[in-house]
Length: 211
Image (cartoon, rainbow, N blue to C red; front, side):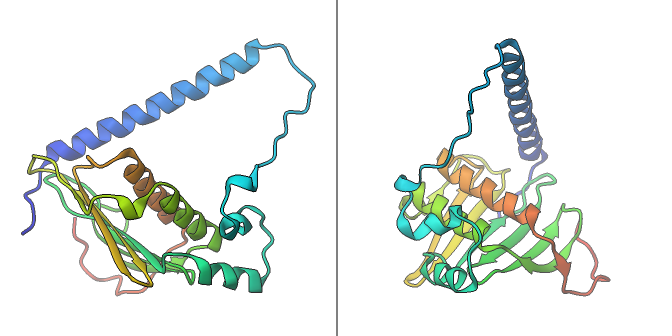
């Protein structure tokens, strides 16, 4: 059964997002001011990533310049064959869509409500974005999350991540975004990748848009 929708949840989400952006802006400003107030040092502060803590199978993601054979070998290793993020309706104007990323580089977006464009779209996700997403999910313990996080309210959206593996599917649903911060970080990363993809419409553009 679908949950009722409410404007209050989306308004709260907007406020939270604004708060996060304000905090981020303040942090950047303070960092810049702090840097300007310090005496200039000519010492080289260039650092290189210590890859010793990265599992050997993921290290190619941080090296770049991979050959076709190396890319295909990496694709075969990745633990997730596809990763889907779904956002359900709420009482307000929450965006409603499903985005699926595949290890072979294919991507598909079904936008239903409250996005700039409504319809079905396809695109490509690069191996570095998908591979690092897999690494992040492994690092943050996605497979150990509870299957469901549920708040005691009736006006919020549900965010569901479905990860397909060779052994089946791992599904984690997060109602009202009350799950652990690690789960939120994965949700945001998938959305960031969605924004990076160049989408092309594959359905009838005359299809009525759901607003």
